[in-house]
Amino acid sequence: MLLQMHPTTEICVYWFCRNLCSYTHPVVGAAMFGSLNALKRKVQEQHKLYFCDLCIKGRKVFISEQVLYTKSDLDRHHRTGDDAGPLAEAGFKGHPLCRFCKRRFYDGDELYKHMEGQHEHCFICRRLHSNKFVYFKDYAELEGEVQQLAEMHDYHVC
Image (cartoon, rainbow, N blue to C red; front, side, top):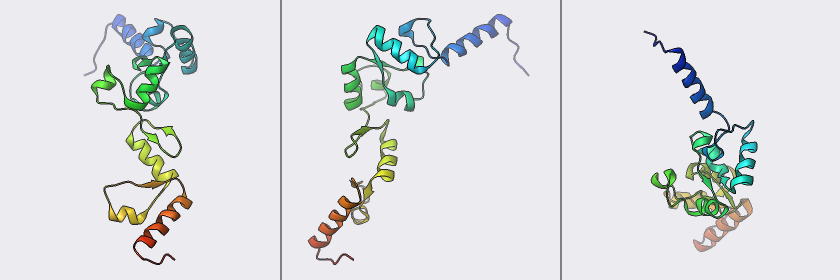
């Protein structure tokens, strides 16, 4: 059976959905913007507040539900998480940092994919310590580690 709605209710639902899916945020009132960059610019210029770009890409909420930060709060958010609010309640502890690239990622899964794709891991270390993830910046650094392990254990490296 198809649910019949009153025309006024349909219009309200349409506008509610349209507002959720548009580039707007409660801090700018009812204003809607043509792009995310336009909204970000307005929020920065008028309110000195900033979106977290990592959260915009990774957090599964509408733009209007994203948390805004001052410059110093955004830096703390990246490093250690939030003191209060929805992310703090969810146990968010900050965006992990790749120590080689000095780039932050939304969560540990994204960092893991990055590390596996962009950096090297030692197969010997992985065998010896299967629960540890040890990475090296590049192949040259990995090669040095393998050489050091070989010398330490008196092995011959091909």
